[in-house]
Length: 627
Image (cartoon, rainbow, N blue to C red; front, side):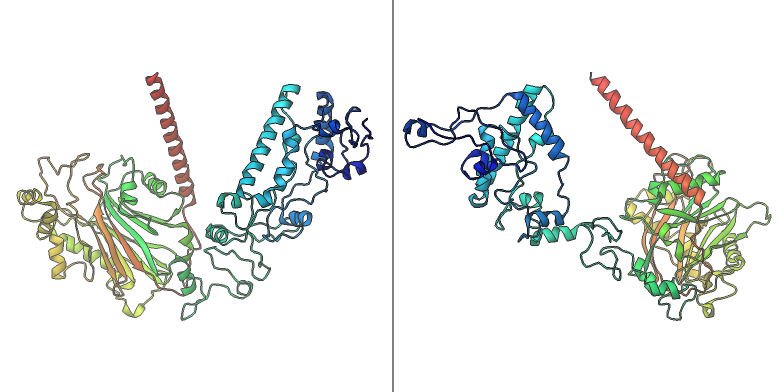
């Protein structure tokens, strides 16, 4: 006859570690009462009863749903999420890996435990998980498969019985994952479970990520995981920031308005220059284009300002225009729109139909002096400003720069008139005005180009190829590589420069492109009108350096894809050596054309929206066509 008593107390359940009730204890939550016909203890008198397997009967579904509801209200809402390393250390104790998830001690209460009256597979999960630490990787797979099957079993049973989505508390694992061994070879598992944070390869990957560290000095805020552990108020700085730190004593004592003789520690000194240009070379873009007064602008200026040969955009853009369009503001807006929000219009000037625009990277505007300009009219009638020159000058750090765009007298045989235009420009440009000369002892009062460290002179000089159109066309029909050098032998400007009558001290990059004048508008053919003008290199870019090898040409070419004028734009890419300067110059103080900047950004946004709408409509029409 069977003898026993009901396990109505937690002490009785705790005294039997092998029973299922001892494994599923949940603190204050008591286990369900077993049926009366279930024996709690089998005596020695009945061997048949001792051989029967133990299988508890599941309770009716209604009490089980009420039990899940009580768990959600009492336990899930009071659950403390483990969001920091301190919580894990407090609850789990010291960990050899510094961040591994430890298994809870046997016998402790688990808040997020499994609900009562689970299936047999769920009751077997603690045994499988206890064997994980010694079973190796295979036991880990068994544990994961058991947990997945249990969750699916609960999901199916709850959905079938209640007809609704099961609560999240019933799907939680009974215990957190145990600590993994140091010899786990799976890199994905170690990273996913945040185990082994001090591993060597994990540290290398974490350090290689480009991020800006946060100091986390605000009170009541948990420390950021990106912050360095050794940061303090005395050394609170980013570990990977490109900006050099500014000391407190420097902010208090230095005014940044007085430079030193050695130019160290000043706003435009060597320290600031090394931050932005370690090699002290600035990328410069210079372009000239005779627009022929056309109102129509090219649909796209990327070929001109952002050529495919250049891997990176330049630091400074200077564009000179002759016979510009009637809407000068529209032209400047197109320049700003093409270069985008990384650039600002530092200065723009006009002299009749001559336009010049200077755009610079927006983080470099603080190192420019005041921009000055001057004009010269070479026509006898000064009211007609189609021919002349426009000069713009400023100092960048300690290097003074002068940019001149000119439109000389046209005509095949008017070489003397063009020489006179050059002389008038050299003597007539009154620059610099307020900005001091960087080397006054080398300056010449009769030559404006001698007063600056770097001079770039570009424009429509109107020098032609001598010999007639028939001779030039015969050369153009030859090999393009050999025809350019043969054409330059007939160039009037090259001949005059060798004589020393024009552009004294100037150089020109090597020419490898075809003549930029004169084309039929919208076509690639040279002049087919009754005048039959000779193709010539009228559009040129010259440069002069006060210090030897301070200006290095990188690229010199034309834009054959822009056909809205009878001239092709010509541009040059240069590397200009910049020297540190003193802060005794009038600064531009970050001035730029803000209205133009905002207008250019709006244009870019509108263009992108139109492009996306066009792609969307094209995709919709394609679907309709297929159907």
